[in-house]
Length: 280
Image 1 (cartoon, rainbow, N blue to C red):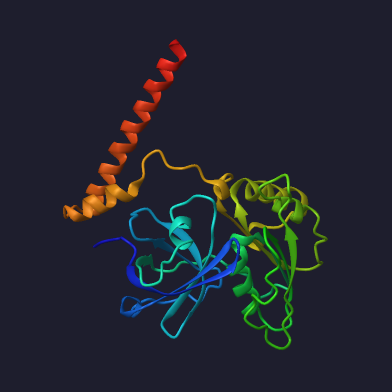
Image 2 (image 1 turned 180 degrees about the vertical axis):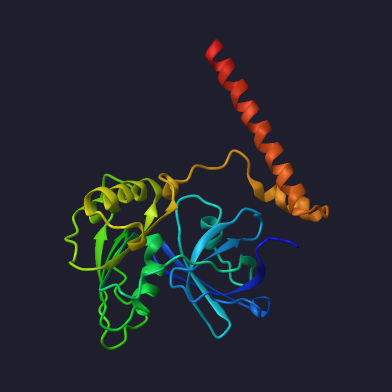
């Protein structure tokens, strides 16, 4: 029996520029007929765009009436950035089955949410689906103007204000500093955070050592690695290898093997070049 996650072909129906660094992609088509949401508000899917066979993971902003909405942060470089920044309407992409991890105890009296722009779709869904009467507070670090109309609507009796925090001018991100400045509510609650991986590692230590939250009371996830907003160009572009492999009828495993071999060859060439430079 295959253990490979289910995959679905989807067509880009619409593209909307939400801000300079934020693009909304709406997917649909017959390929999504069997797709199912987990119902977990921070659920994500793996996305593979045309010309690539590597994937990137994105939070599901919404799934309704056969349309799947993904809000994508665009960087200077990246597998998906170059695609999402252009005219992608009509393109066919592949997505995986959805997975989620948000697991707030029913007994929670408060909910705190922190993240950068990559975490905003999950934070918004969590706020929108939070139980009435729950004390919800959120902080989101952003590189652009506040997206004040991003929430789809909060039901009567729900709280859920977002404090918009600008990205520091001298750092890529500083979400850890946001958490360290929080005045924590009394009683039992739940903390959710996502963003740059090094920041998340620092916060896990802070939660355990300073705040002394039990591990069941928080979920902290690294969505990207430092430098991710300014990704370096790849030594080997997988696009041509993917297209050539598909044209030759190769399997994905065979294409992966060809890509790995090309990367090994590029690494060996770089090492030889460095050695020759050192000998000069």
